[in-house]
Image (cartoon, rainbow, N blue to C red):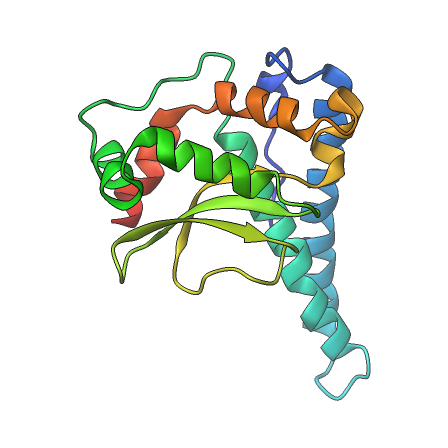
Length: 191
């Protein structure tokens, strides 16, 4: 069974109100609870049950909702570390995007696309390539075999409370709160 992580240490994060964070934490906890609930149901249901296929298909939504939020919250900090100037991640970003600024511009533009979903910096180890990708739903559109390094939640629940429809301001607050040490550690494990 999965256990919800506690992200209360993020309360007071600049650019994110307590109400917005607590609402977001509750949503995340719901994904954890539902992933566990579906696992319990699937363990009891026989494959000949008419509900089996529906629960099996829905599990990916709940699981990815849980895991993507863990990556998202885990990447944020009230005292974020900057990206290491001589680190392998920055070298890779420059190789694949030309510069850190070009990567960031592409990431922000991707996050501003119309619709709801996620913008994710992935690392594709097989091709040794970093990619900024738009994911419309938790359970569809992910790059098979690629590791999510930095997900940005752009579902309305992540920003409407604090920013209304000003998604660009939310993205700015997110970018300032990224703890690059965490992202560099994810990249090192994925290489």
